[in-house]
View (tube, rainbow, N blue to C red):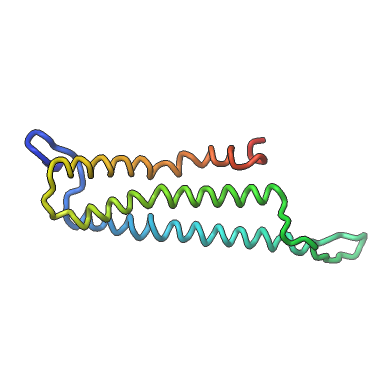
Length: 154
């Protein structure tokens, strides 16, 4: 519990080692590692979907032949919608996780400075607001699937 002013206490991170660890965890894991992995696996999925449609096995009685699909840029509608949903989810995660990371890094950098009551209240409001925004990617994916893809609505 941190006392900002007389009779004004708030439960919050105490400046020090724990807050520094939280700040760097937020920066390294939530702002760099997770979005990077989402982008890598998303691009890898996109590449696999595209290569999956290049060569198809066409059964002919007892002999199996392979044929190359002529139009390599045409993906089935379901695959295009899946790639769109994957891109939207990745973008939403990145957009919603960056503000909290920036806020926590700012607070970590200014944790030993003396702040006015108004500045502390603004920081608290921004922190709470960005924390709520940080939960949006986990709640909104169902709606992005419904709105972003006709196939997944059925």
